[in-house]
Image 1 (cartoon, helix red, strand yellow):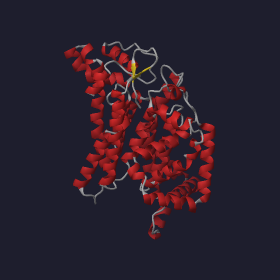
Image 2: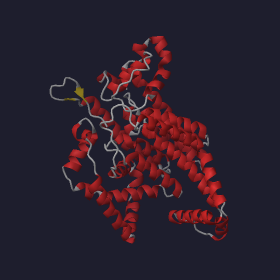
Image 3: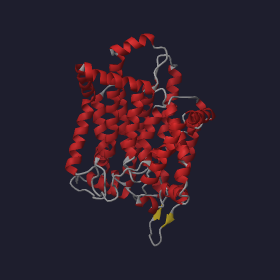
Image 4: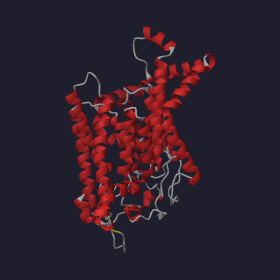
Length: 456
């Protein structure tokens, strides 16, 4: 942080709007709003709450300086480390596990994910990402511990940082509903009878097929059971539903999700965003995803399921061909790495977007294999929320992938210390490169006197 503050003492990029707005709040001017800001005022409100003692002791100008405001995200990141560790331990703890070894894995994983390159980079700038990530992860932690009230409250806080976090509130509601459905299926008379003779566990397809049979069976012959199931789902999701209703009211009154300048934030159906996310995840989780045995299994799977493979390739080709959108920012702002990904790969070689489809297929296969131990309802809820959080975005922006990536990564089982060490190496290498480029390789835009810097 010291190095970044030394070379970039003035606000940079979106910091210009965020810091200007935060300073208004520091001075108690809560009625002033910068129309260029598109998110709700959660970051500035929480900032004032954190810095209030320092404002009283040191004065507004010192406490709410550029460095002081950036320090708030360091605090968020410190909190994120503890939340990551607690989530990982909660998800992966088993009665059979060696507690000391499990604690060590949870600690190292949390440290590793705290340095996840995108989140790590924006920790040193006054952006909404660290606070948004902290509150979503805190919501997930409270959800895992069964405290739905606090989970929903943290979800509401996360929306104040970024409106699209409503998707992850829906994710928690979906997980709650999935738990109720799973219990209902396990306690269903037909399932109990089958369990006595069932040897092998059901596949995802068989589980979902069984769910549909039971659902339509109850709808036809015992509607009261179905009503009871719906009632249980509503009760378990009640606090999340309240947040969703309040958010719906906000969207209605605001006439849209975006506040402030909406000109560059139009929703669309950018289906290839899923492929970008898959590629992004596979690259950062290469040690877990790209393995000789899995590649062989993928080839065998593709050969044995030729109809599925052909269908995927055909549908993907159509989606890439008809639904690839190029945002103005993507092709005009050469400060972002996405500019170079697009201009040097996708734009220079137009056919590459189609040639990469088989690699997307492998990526999806690998991601699903890694989550094989999760039940089908968890996977469905995650996939639906992943689609909802990425596809409507016209702009290819890696920051949109932070939360789905972390939520996915936290559910990846520990394989060995070798994979974890390689993951650390990937993060470390990328962090060194990006921070070096930001600090040591500034450049100018024509007659503009301000130095420009490379960033995510």
